Image (tube, rainbow, N blue to C red; front, top):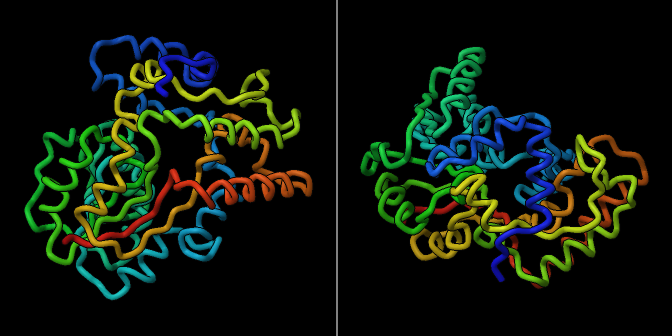
Length: 324
């Protein structure tokens, strides 16, 4: 069922205005979809409280992907998948701040890592950061993907870290551009949201999210930088999502089937997010420093999501695939 506008849209707009300034909200009122997309990633405020900031959630994700809560997917990639390969060329599309790519650039396995992103602000910041770390095997390009020159049979690795779900025609991108620019032994690596387009979750998932939210005491439900209590989850409306960022989850549901139809699976690790992402949004700051009560509460939420995943597909996925 498609939702045009919800209560959460109103709350989120209010919180974004407080956290990022009302000029940010005003910037969304333009007919240029490209401008609205760029504004979503420029002047990003650190004032946020999403599920990925919680150390225990990060450890859970690592465990599900690598088998070790202290080993992230980049370390796993280098230790298990690419450990014997050298002179690698990696392309990252929608690289954002390029934090993950700079972590990979610290390995001698890479001859060159190319980061491409729409946001000049983020690219400029990445350039400064790379210089401070003396990384010479990484380059940064501010470019629209339609203007980027894909070299045939050139890259050893193409990486999408939370960016593939922002591309509007996943099948065309993967089959006509990514597949062709990878060399014969090339790998596609994704760490992605692969759930419903535009976050239009089915009713049974919304119900499960609210059941999980009810586990949390009221004292931990105060939304970040506000006095608003998170009593219910309504989901995102399509209208607000398109206005805020036309690229957000525009074709996410096609990611997994398209990859399976055009690439061979080397490794695939689902890690949930169906419940946790939505329950913890705006209230994650309560769980940065844990006591026994909060630790037990997170444990119960983790178990709730695991039980949900027993009969439902994961909304997030790490995968490594080989060009066919």
